[in-house]
Length: 188
Image (cartoon, rainbow, N blue to C red; front, side, top):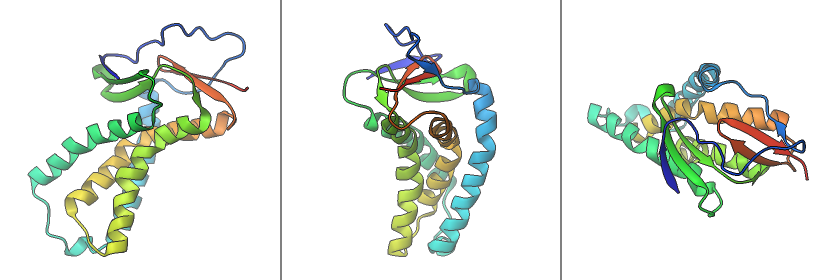
């Protein structure tokens, strides 16, 4: 894995030929704007679930430092979970694009469509849904954990939006590849 500051780097050695199709997707700014309502609805739904399925209302209120700590830990864990689902080939990049306020992971090689979707959805499942399910099952709750779960729901909206674009446009048997921000796919 390597670190990168700036726009998502172009994939070296990848020049899509006629066998690759470009996936239709908005620019980074437009994607963030379109994903925001998804994130708001998801965060509201997670909040309702935390209060209805766990004893969150009886938990001690979190300190400002606890909330800040939950956010500071959540962002790198979110990105690490994306990378954890990447194949172990050395093609992973962790980056920050300051002008877009975007922390991202990127993979410079081919991926199967199902793996691509799994990479997108893993942080939502592990940070937002798993703690909620475990807290509901054990009838325990933590305000900081609930805050991280709900906040991650907001931050994972772009991932959820992207997974929806892939599911809508790309056959499950396809192979996918990134070239900078753009996503290409082909069957076979």
